[in-house]
Image (cartoon, rainbow, N blue to C red; front, top):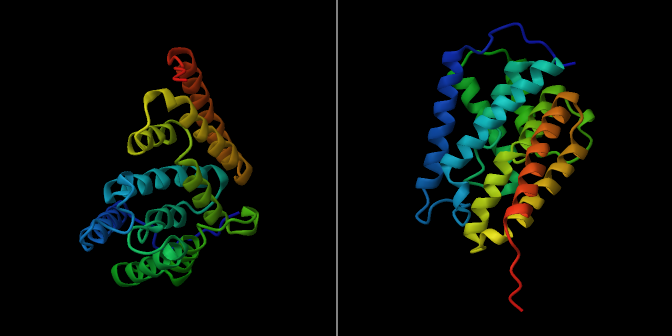
Length: 225
């Protein structure tokens, strides 16, 4: 079970201020580089996309945390900061840098117990962990599960459609691309531990299966040989 923090619960006003800070930080990360940010070669990795992903993970992680008995405040705040450094540093250090930024913000803008700040920053730092999730605090597990699940389902399929255009593919490749979403979803189901996250993955994958079946039915193959 998660560790309950009874002191200084996060108010809606405080959380809204954090959201604004994260959105502005992402925007500044892109604008500060002449060529458009570290991940500029992926059009969907704009500040707008990254902030949308973060908000999705906030909602998913809160749903999982509430159902699984984790501390929802810790989980939501960690989710909000988990990718704040994604557009300005390399992938292998973005979690550690995000934890540093979260600690600086929470200790200078808020008045939370040290235990709360430590739990949030630990979850941000460890959200890229690739090992057994049961070894981590429940709040971190909920964050990782939500992060994995955001690219599963309809959202994952939409991102693959966007990738098709970027790679100059035609609509006839759609079923193949959506198949990648299913593969990612099956990998996600292998990683997640909570029943709540598993149920979300199952629902989302059913939608992708239907979509791929519709594509198979409606998009004719063309043999150019």
